[in-house]
Image (tube, rainbow, N blue to C red; front, side):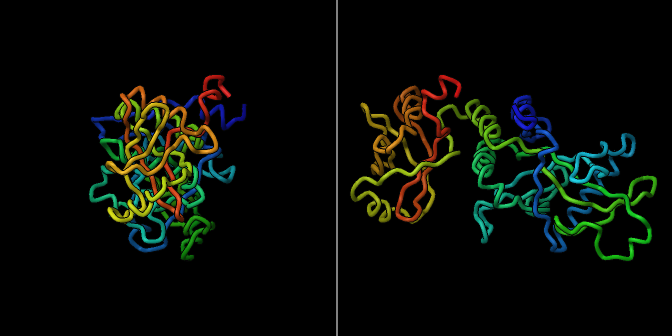
Length: 311
């Protein structure tokens, strides 16, 4: 088992804290923390600087968390909690996820926006995070850290710090008037498969009736169903009902049958069929129309035989 796998295996569970009014994802190994894209625009840039300064000021008694957990062995790291906010209003990528200061900082999550997750991480993590945000009664947060490099006074004449990779560095100062360049903001996110497992476990507790939208599989349209769907909705992503009827599992939009899921060439949907039957023969899911095909989202791509044998 790799170091990353061991770290993920020991991660706890996703928990909603009614008192703090936040749902927290457990932290994973900082060695594998993922970077985010910090914005150069003045407002999110200043929001990030103010957030980092406040977090540093709050640690006046305990100091920084330590060194060597960032990208450089001598980096100081400032532990923080951030909010993860799906941003379907993003015109570049409707699946975008914003990194915002926590709700305790006041204002809307858009006003607290500091960064975006990179698209390459959304591919594996985005589905679970968007589902978690939709199901949680509170904002979703995760553990993170900000890399800090102690600054020399003669560096202040420069407009930027020593490392521009994550959007440009800013100066913050601790209670001893020691100045630091802020480096990258990095998320202590579990591996994609562990995050999916954690989110499925959380969601089953709050919505046991729901088939969760994590991994999508293409399935053929029933004859005429695509044209019929287009006549009642132009949405590209929509709710469907999965109905277990005899030996068939069929996706419906309202009363319009869209696809016989059993006709797929692999047994992707056998676990879903069993769960739908356990729910009394009907459950809700998500689907999307893409390039003249139907994609239905289910919890897991592995067949029942693999899950039962632990493979």
